[in-house]
Length: 456
Ligand SMILES: Cc1cc2nc3c(=O)[nH]c(=O)nc-3n(C[C@H](O)[C@H](O)[C@H](O)COP(=O)(O)OP(=O)(O)OC[C@H]3O[C@@H](n4cnc5c(N)ncnc54)[C@H](O)[C@@H]3O)c2cc1C
Image (cartoon, rainbow, N blue to C red; front, top):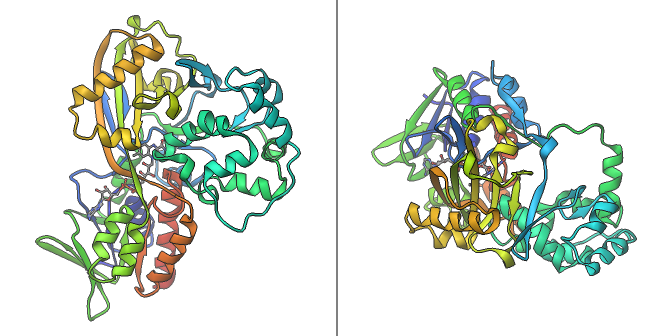
């Protein structure tokens, strides 16, 4: 008999299984694909580690590092991004313009680089000075990021900084996302200081020496998945099958239907995207299913291009570039792996990772890999002057993979939690609810495991 059934073998399901199994509970984990890890997947090609999905996680959220420390040998493989060379370019007028030093999201924390930057015109620079004197503000209602940014700066700051930075994380129409759910730290500055510039400067003054911004694993993010999966061996039963529905039995247990098989357990965790959880509960609770469906998702495509080093004259003097919508053809962002994570690229190669998001990704969903690669090559030509030398490419499509925390997201999640009270011992976890990155997914999975143990 299982104690807990988990649907979904991405990092959320794996982390939940890991923390539950450490409490001696017997777990069955149902994963629809043949491999574990969900969106985390690393290819190894010609000695280069190529990330199909996430390439790192933010260092200031501790959950992944804590998980890694609890698994023998894993934390030794953590490495930081090469922050000595950290610099991001933004495409403006078809050219790569460096983001000025000291930008914290859309907030300039250092005057001189921001005021000298060709990225901003005089009008935007004038807004910096005015913003510094904003008085404190408490908003009763959640607002869109577009409105929030324009309250402090101007349209250009939204178009050339905020939207492109957030596109890399959320994929969709970042201006429409919820300020409260996506930029809570900046909403907090507004409440405490009025000015975001003053908030960021104050926080920087108080903070000690900063480590790297991003962390990852030497052999790629897949190392995390493989290590957690190994730690589950002999403790957690993995069933590869697509769950089609869940139902509470008369004895109070939950049953998971996977086509021809069934699993039963007193506790059930749905660690899959919200729209998949909606499908699973639809017959049992249409209201809950509707609420879960109301969290929209955006798509992404990642394209890795490996080039002969001798064919690339570009200096790769930063982590890569962002393409604001106004300047965008299809590629929204590009990472220069040689600079961000040098150990991942074999000598003699340059590896560039392009990110296509939102409608552009949907439009290319049915295109052949060759067409997608051609699109990326055209952008590398236009923006980096790379014309030849392609040695290998990989294309990974992630349809409906990035939850969009649109205005009112926190309220939607509260309604889901309210509705979940009708289903004791059923739990939701994953990146749809309270943080879209891997550290948030692991933190939430651990919290879910703790809730289950406490309630038993
Ligand atoms: C292109 C891309 C780049 C990203 N980059 C970063 C980054 O750099 N840093 C970062 O922190 N985060 C990044 N993210 C986000 C990060 O990948 C996610 O936060 C994290 O992987 C979420 O894990 P999860 O387990 O919740 O979901 P998933 O990884 O989606 O796992 C869910 C699993 O559930 C399974 N499943 C679904 N339905 C069923 C069913 N009915 N039955 C059985 N199994 C089912 C799926 O097959 C899947 O394996 C990125 C995401 C994408 C798409």
